[in-house]
Image (tube, rainbow, N blue to C red):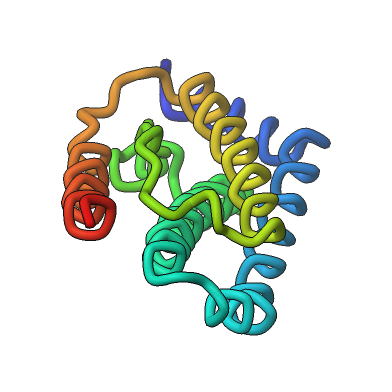
Length: 164
């Protein structure tokens, strides 16, 4: 696909109601999560057991990593629409949503506060939606080096905190 045609389809997408809704939802969730983790979440974490607190730390890192990846992807799409970035640049692996599976649960997750669990679930939904949109717009051409790096880091965290 030529860059001009590709840019036009990206511009169409970034101007769509689906994009606008996803953008609002993603950015609102980033703000809501930050407010929770800096306020009520911090207080709730203090009352957890050691394993619960470690799970809280690990899961909040997973949550913020996913949300930052979503927010970054959404901002890149908006930059393409506003001609601040080329579609070719936006296609680079470093701007893609990495398909990272986070199925391993950390010890103590059963103690996590309900609000954090809700944020994790909602972030998972928007992450999957943006991952599918990324794949649809750009295809499955990425090398997944970023995905391996995040997966390796999560494995190390799980080994350090989940094995205790």
